[in-house]
Length: 232
Image 1 (cartoon, helix red, strand yellow):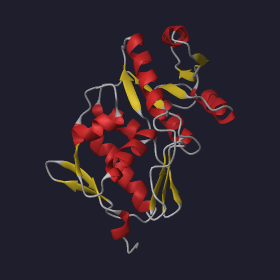
Image 2: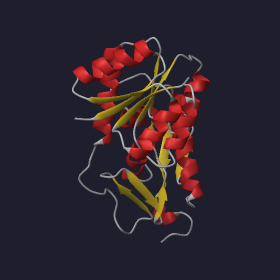
Image 3: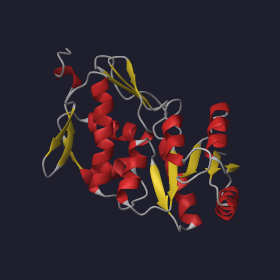
Image 4: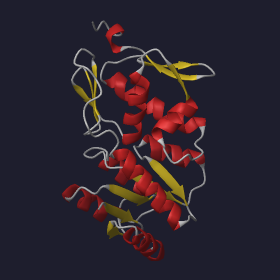
């Protein structure tokens, strides 16, 4: 049984989501204010958060930013904003998915369960070897570059896992979308590019410059860490 935080200031929508999630077997903790939800998330770790963008107290974007300072919990934004720029901002702050209002509560439950499955993906053991500067622990969803912890979202972790499996191989955007999202949704190239941009930035902060390279008109590839930045 998973614990889902529903952070939504509209009582009718909040109750609707709580009812559908409870029927699906999940435990629901509901909040109407962003600041209250943030305090509760620091006290107890939920398995997933449904987070409205427009909230009293602290808006959803700021809640997401602060949550990413201490947690990798999967986050799905609920938003009435149809502008792609707003959705990209949410993804750049560390959200894993978004749902645009009005929505089907059944679709929201399906997305919640798909994201929960992905967050439990390959929990058995690390996928990297000790000789590589990149270490991936699929059980904890933690990634390290030369022993520095990378602050990755679950989507970014899955993309890095996919790319690093076969260094030098070029993965198309469609392949990367399928690695990040297993529910066959339509995701734009710009969304994938946004995730890759964030991933590159976090790797660069750890000293891994140009590890992920763009191949014009095709996609992206991972350059073997042993051959970059002088690492042997």
